[in-house]
Length: 493
Image (cartoon, rainbow, N blue to C red; front, side, top):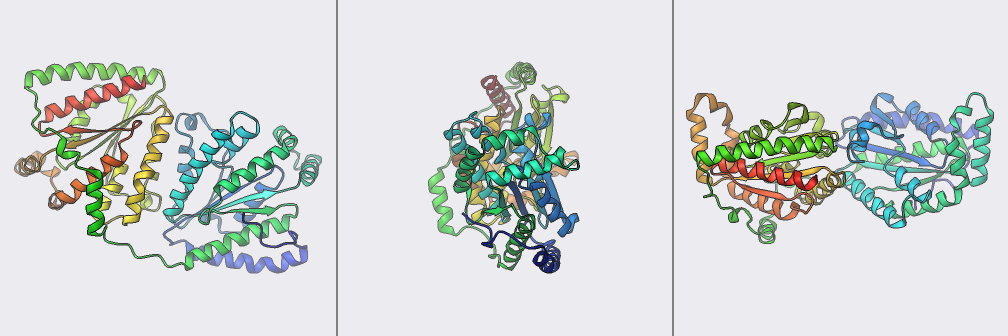
């Protein structure tokens, strides 16, 4: 476990004032160089009550340029936060590249308190820590610098600190009844915190235990660790991205994933009469189910992926025709904006998770990471390969929060796509739908087919299965999508 840098754990006022100007100058100099970096910094300030977590945050904001710092204190979740998976509130505050986020309280707080107060068992704590480790590893793999500080006080020092704060008219408000309750459970808090630190301390996401009895030593040590970590990260050479996986890896991926698309029967079709009958039936059923889900506060996430010209837009219109517009949102996904590129690729999707009882429809989605970004070389092989597991963890959190997840890949044949492309070119009011990019993607049909097959094999789960839609006949595809979504909602209800 990383321990604070200096053995004495104290810093005299004279020494502090002597060393502080250089520290502050180097912090500001390094922060200035960091502003255009392609990574961000996350600082977690935790520790025992009375150790001065708020004071440390104030010091860092004083010594850094606050315009490049985002400070977040996590308290009781709001109604809006409770209606979404627990990590939604944390994803929203993750810093963009070139920025530093300082957090008081974090994803560690609730699991730790719940275990100390006996509301959960060790197995629940282990499960929570496993999720924490996956979350932090994902952010660190994406380049984020994560520094976690545990401010430590002995039980005796904690009692003295709380009493001193309480006696002072200017600081007595900072001591809450819960602080004294936690003090009575000091030993249990300490044992549990040690376990948390041991289970989540890694070279990429280290814990630093800092003695907090001496305020000057505490503040200087935290700031110095931040400085050294930031300078070290800036000095590292970033490996050049590869244009794509080697041929051998692509062949192996194809062998492992099989060919799910080849098993889709594209000859399936519906007559106009049968289509109209089934459309009315399933749209009426969907309308009733989406209102029932709203009453029970069950949210819905619908994902549409598919070939260019496969009919995603027209299928989405048949869904929304059956829904009250107050209950759904459509999120069209295009190339990420400059702001979105400065975050982890999942950041922009977490932001759109619906509130309880509402539905979000994604017209393309987070699967772009393992499709277009993989095929076009926008993501390095190590990035898109680890995305399968990252996506599974994301969707698992949705399902655990009772969010119904339906994922559709609309499959059409290559000849059918060509027919639709030509029809779009020849029809004036449809010409806007066809672009040069569509033709470029078509030339890479084989590479995209490999990517889709592996995506389905590795991300179709019990809690978020893929449904492969036979899309050569648009009428058949729309009914299959409506029927599947109705079944998903019935299961969720």
